Image (tube, rainbow over all chains, first blue to last red):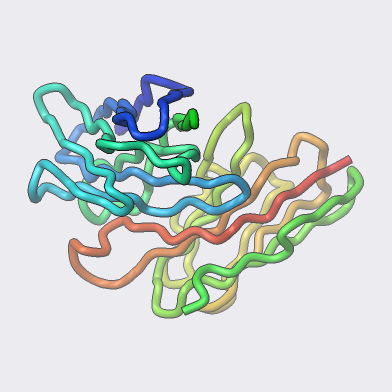
Length: 114
Length: 117
């Protein structure tokens, strides 16, 4: 069985300050992990993915995430927040390569304070 | 590529009416997914297809919901009869291609917002 827990339902940061969105996962196998972003009234868009290659994964728009097996975490970070980063972020797990049935977290709403 | 195309973008209907949501996946993608998003339950997988064949429909809430994929470029999600609790945003997504680079990567449509009065 696979599951993912997003530890914060809402995060607020000031523009220009670092962003940290936390995600812990549970998986019976070597998981694939993803972060998706959803802007208001839009579909979800892939930010980045981890599939057992490098543990530090770089994505679009300056975001990156680090896979830490010992902590079962896959936190999303960005050094400097931009107003356009305001959105809902979803951490997603697949318990093995080729398993198309993904499990989505409940989402973290990121607010950027001008 | 125009991406995953869903229609209608918005639908308002009355309880008891039939609702049909439509999806055109990305050409060449062999997986198609229907998700439902609500404030209370978040994003739920309803059903997914591989090569037009339903693989897992365990997320379909009840018999009022049905989904079809008659060919590789078209899928429908039907609710009959509709109820107010079906109000949600319904997303279609597709994935496909070969290799690790594409593994499990979903491309989502913009969604169909359904309101049942």
